[in-house]
Image (cartoon, rainbow, N blue to C red):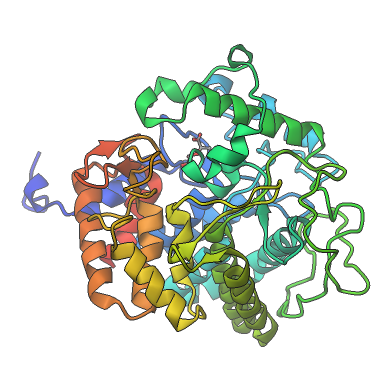
Length: 482
Ligand code: 9WN
């Protein structure tokens, strides 16, 4: 009932509605992406959620990241899902009994007490940690937030840059479409076509209890996701190329006070004595190597952005951060050399299992706009591509508006998502396209609120698809409003 102090719904703002979503999705130690569809903690969701949550409660935002990092594996990987033991097993597939992290992942240092998946997601975490710190440096220092997370974030980057350098050029690879986070993107159609799907009767898709089949990946996609994940699990979550020789170079000087190198749970990552990388691309099927391996521009751009953030964190902790900034700049150059496609004016994914560059325009190929050290001509080309015929909608589609596989409703095959929109808004601002950034920000705030904070929307009409009350949509709206 309205009182003098409660003026009622008319006075409610998008800010309050977004806050309410985050409150409803908060479990006490972290935030679920969606109460129905995704009832556990997801890795890159938590990073985006923390970025928004810092405007509501810096303490909750710090806790969000600390909870995730507490489930880190000994080899440095941050698992893509941390399971909530009080949620029934059949609420989400694949469940902990599929991943079997504490047994199958033992050699890789999976935690014993918490159940997780064994794959990873894009490394937004150091960027999130830095932004969360900046929201309330006093609280952060009083709690020792950065000193606590720094060694784990450093071990995470080390894992990606060494164990996951499957192409040998210095970039991190993903070994499953779920790792890149844009599961059924048309970029993955060709590499996935080589994967023999697990039989449909061997698993039950819990996602279809909550999502419309036409908004979700197909059964055939799922068969392939299951096959790849089961194969990786059955290899003990080992990462191939670098496994036998240990994870490489000693470039992590910026540990900062209290930042012990390799302070993540032990997993035996000895540095290669010579500090050099292994031989060039082998396109290979060496020991412990699976059927899917790819270099993705968004995954690597986020790693680079996070490496810049880690440099700032190191500086705050008393080190110089110089080596990390230099590494981020070097990786930016490698990203351009390896994945830039001048003809299309965007970055492409690279299929490491023999296919080379993947000639599909996916939103992932625009995300490097985020990087401050991107050469000017490349940033300018990306801005043009973003406004051109392939991506020029009010909200940025996840895939080429003119592409053969474009579908405005199906997940990562066309709908606009708010995390990629948020990254591109930052990218436009970073490279001086302020009006474009403002227009995108306004469109995202309006659509997020009007759609009930949808998981994704039709890029033309803004119509809600997937889940509503979605964590990162609400969180990033709060950040855009701040
Ligand atoms: C598999 C949680 C996650 C996001 C991903 C998104 C979707 C999961 C699924 O949901 O993936 O990880 O079950 O479809 O594609 O980006 O992190 O929100």
